[in-house]
Figure (cartoon, helix red, strand yellow):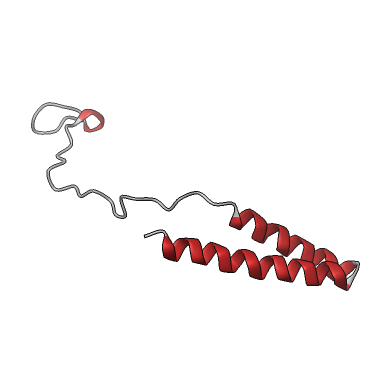
Length: 77
């Protein structure tokens, strides 16, 4: 099936004149705080099964990493 200019639908020229550049153009810097938060969550759940000491350490690591991660995102701009 050909269009009015004789080209098939799969090989038609695309008009890019009305396209926009996606925003934001700058991505946040990489950080290790999400991995630390995941470790804190794992410690907390492991502590529920085994010992309250793991739960306390996991909750502390979770809170610390959440604060640091949000702090980096706020001050990144």
